[in-house]
Length: 298
Length: 298
Image (cartoon, rainbow over all chains, first blue to last red; front, side):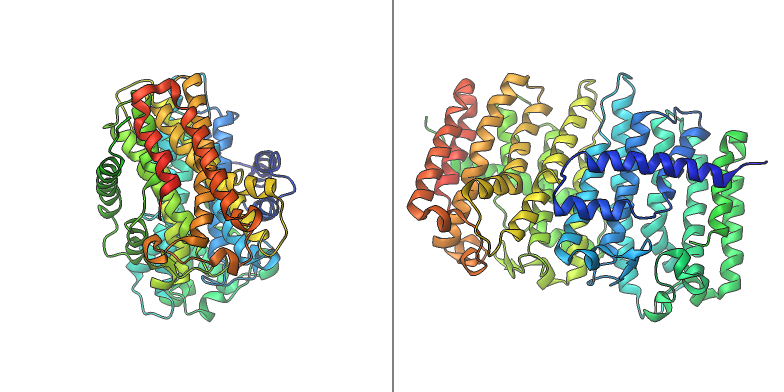
């Protein structure tokens, strides 16, 4: 399969960045809060979650130009950005560099960073409830909101972040670390893929195949994140390296070694791609994204 | 009109506390995050926002026993509680007492307090999207989510909190303080009333009467909050008094004097009650709540 992933990612990032900018700049100009939200949101992000959402809609034959899909994909990036802002706070990871620039509390101040995070999270849920002429849409939108909130909430991302902090300087076993990452990163990645399918009206069997793909991909993404934390170039990543070792975080390379981590990531990606076999060529983007997760430098 | 407000509030608080407890304790047991969320949510709150939501549904003849109304009213209390947790943080108001107990970051720690706030906000949006046999319901629920997110977001509550911090130790005029309070407290109170009406299928004229009521009530609530900050008993309020003067906050008593503040609150409540005339006896609870806001000791 010959697929130009670089071109695809670039084109999607352009669309998503334009969509994000419309949704954040139209209101609140002159407000420091809005400036901080825009600063963080419009940083040089990979836009992985919105791209996955759109690529999943493509895989199931959905309308990739639909404004509702655009709202959902923007909302996912906002939730991801809010989580980075809060994770970077002095009371949490105390990071000073993010997406190649000073973190929100460094560039602005701590109160503004907390509130900008809160505001991006809230704006995500303001964006998704759109009106539509399609009578099937309101119920689908409600399912998407519920699923995203669940993935981002105390059954998911936030509980994952709690455990990540709690596990510092502790000896944690492999299964616990895997579960922590599934909560912290995996569920929102899964929700990104599945929301693109739900909004496009995909049936349950289709959704279950995509869930299988997303779970492997989400975990592989975290494994490669941990590998980059050891081997990556901070100038390319736009964030500090070596922080896991410094903070005694239970990262995969520290637990199973760097070679076994790479092998594990490869196996996860192979399985993720297997889950896409039913979709044929329509899943070419999802398939290429999986390969990219393995090879990414940032 | 002879209305037993004390009995009404007590009965509604019992229902709401039971509903909140069900929604927070069924999952996540053993998690420190969940413990912190429950600690804050189940504190001795007035439950004003959920009560207003239910009372508004009553005023428009809605089904006050509907599970969707219960979800929305719980979500409103969760959003209010999250805002208190974050406002109390060291980087913001640095408060140590809330609802008669140590604030979340004092009882737990700062990271847990930030995350418990995030989780309550997110849980609110997980709760509201319920399924219903009524085909009119999905669109109504979507309107409610959009309105609540807008009121709680960077056009509303969060921008209000930003200004509240920015206005400390500054000379701010009356109109700016009024607008700040409208954003910080007023819009969520308005959303509480209006969501009860929307979910019950109220028409636009009805909603506009309730909006008029809620705007006056919300502002009066803030004026009486400022008065209590000067004259109130911390033991009854469950939070510290005198903090506005200490922090040089632009509160109403400092700006226009305590007597003029009381007169202003009275006028606002009179106007709020006037807006309810179209509803007759069905608005007895909303009417009594307005009077209570004026006389409240906490």
